[in-house]
Length: 272
Ligand code: A2P
Image (cartoon, rainbow, N blue to C red; front, side, top):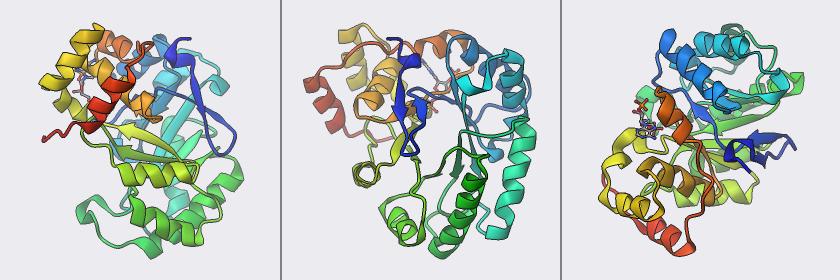
């Protein structure tokens, strides 16, 4: 089966296409519109954006213009990391829905456990309150699933203390050499699907000689090995590209990395 047609099942019971098209750092306007349109043209049905990416409007326009039935698509967006005042959550959600021009999203994520300017700061209490609002959005049916992003073990454990709904997804920065094993293990144990953003380390893996050697063995590109690695570890990769050939290549993952080579790739330490 074409990997683009394969799905994981979320703890809500909904299915989610195994490869998502990431749109971080793709500027609003022609770039975001064209790359989203190309991804849809080449069979991607899962698109990942965020209010802070600033490109929801162009992503949404490409979705509309594709003519693809809404129920064949899986669309994710995110609550800005800066919003830790629970009274502001619904408003941000409405802004995203307006930008996207959608009636519902398939997944709505808390973008990070702390505002970006205060990375690592303790917002556990606020995250609990924000999560209650995320649960309220989930209850309205306008977000078919809710989840988190950039949550490590301590953030998840704090959330579990008050959460009524267990997150469906934890989206983390994940690539060969940066596999965040404890976070993945806890998420998986709790039935939370882990999504991998920056699966190519925003391009930094593309020059790696160790991965290049494996890629040559399989007659695949470094990008394809890096993305297949994510899938075989049971995670959902979110590759992004603005280039048509690379958009196609990143979804051409119907091959198998051997167990020995997976062990080797899992053991690699990559200093970026
Ligand atoms: P481009 O948009 O020109 O293709 P990540 O997903 O880890 O954030 O990495 C994204 C970066 O990797 C972008 O700079 C993108 O550039 C590049 N990229 C994406 N797919 C490929 C590929 N198959 N081969 C080479 N570079 C790629």
